[in-house]
Image (cartoon, rainbow, N blue to C red):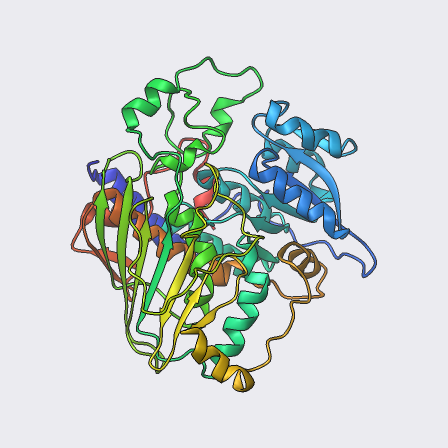
Length: 469
């Protein structure tokens, strides 16, 4: 990748757009509709197969939503038919822009379960029309996209939620209560790990492209699927979850699981942005994610808290070094398996948090922390603060926030910076070298190629308007 004058100009202009107001198209502005206390939220669902189908099912379970529209670029493909059958009264669309044009006044909120690279334009379009927005994790594929999403959340005053579901479960409330009570304090080191198989393991970019050659499905609008990204020839190893393998389309293992593993640590320890990310990789590629990654994130001291280092590990054999008397790993039955196979019960996704006086082990999603060693936790049991129960799951929390009854627990103002940490980590993976980030200027210093990746390449023609706020 080279850093051309056009790329540098786009980066400067685009990053500035998050802090200043540009002239947006006239059709992009509306106030949220007031939903009655006894009314349901009219929900449009964009991305209705695979993970999108699971999201829609969870929203339907709450009893708080009317599923009024279903939208997918591959509408009618086998992975979408079950959702279409379950909601026969919902209007069907292939293009989210057509959906908003035809029935925007009937929609209160949207859930977005599309590939990582297409979250951003859909969410920006919806918010500008006054629609509340639920977006699967990770939020945006680039640092810039997350910056603009946070700015749009503030400007349009809509409810927003990122889909890291554990942020509404026991781990969230425990981490908050234990931090406020001083049980978790003076944390200087975190180890976070996800050692299950990934789609790209054992592959190269060349083998994936060769295996993925296939005719374009008649059901798929390939041009629309590509969204704002560069045009490319159809390959089945780009679609249906395979996009997560590619740097310019997804966020790899870090973006997939980081938001479920170190989300509460990032929020309640107020980690902010890393000052530096140092990668150690196995099987680096310029196109797909490594076979294994160890990423060292360095966070500066802040608000009375010491400097902290977080080590992220992925790869089936790239196991973390665990403390003495670690015991059994934390594994909960409600943690979903990865898209390729089952979670290895000997080392399920998790974390170790090292404080000044105490060490904690935890799992993923909503699983709670345990104090290491077990005897120490037993001794402290009577003095540990009471942890409140969650009043609503992540999906109900979002819908109640749309109605003004609750506040979202993972709004863009919280999940955006978390996603930006992962964006910076992915840049270090992509270039396979350390990157240094300056929070004061919001850029990577001393490395033009890395700095350009904060924004990524300019959007395709016809998608530029989403980068104006």
